[in-house]
Image 1 (cartoon, rainbow, N blue to C red):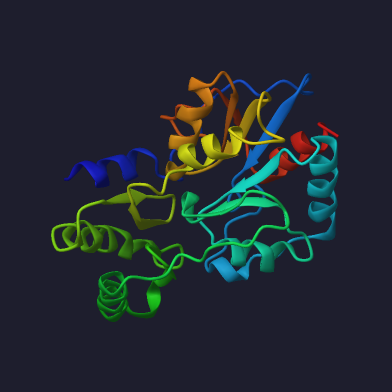
Image 2 (cartoon, one colour):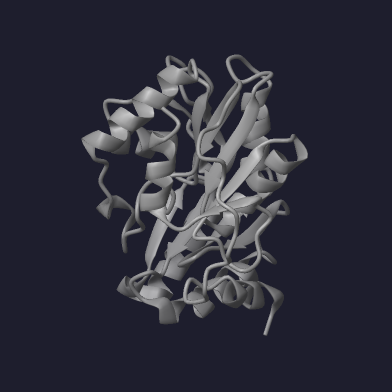
Length: 260
């Protein structure tokens, strides 16, 4: 069994959650908030487009953004356009595609990450082999294979993207997730996206707080820990670099409401 599959099994959602301390009930002082979306603010669905945002969640995010004077940003694998569509009419600060896209201020334009021809060809090949059981999400230079509706396809999906590394230009990596696998450029990293925000107003000088739920969030947790922030993993598995844990989306939203 290769190293990637071993890691995926060790972090399988069927495993018992780790018992971790909860973050303090109310944060004090000057802090900045970074939020993953799927699995953190919203329950996962079989298809990424099957989720919906309640008015209550929009109101919660607006309230937090006001309280923090704008020091709130999404750090997500979704594109910024997909985030805007999901949370409309809200347009908050965001790093999309793991930091390949940024909206550093609410009024900024977002440079769209185009899909390279070799990634497009790979997506076609994987889609043809796996069929309708898996959803192939094309996100510019990021390729995501979702297998929540067909878990038995995950090992083969992982094998296909691992094999593709040998034929693609250097600079890509494979990232397993809770119910799928992604092919990402090396520079697509949540930690780097967080650091970019922390270098600008209104984030500079504040203590960063990051909430996420998946393997791709671990890089963000490491950055948060290195900068003296607060890292929180939702549904924490046995192995995580996060300092604190929350049991699920419902507990996460309750904790966020407690910060208002």
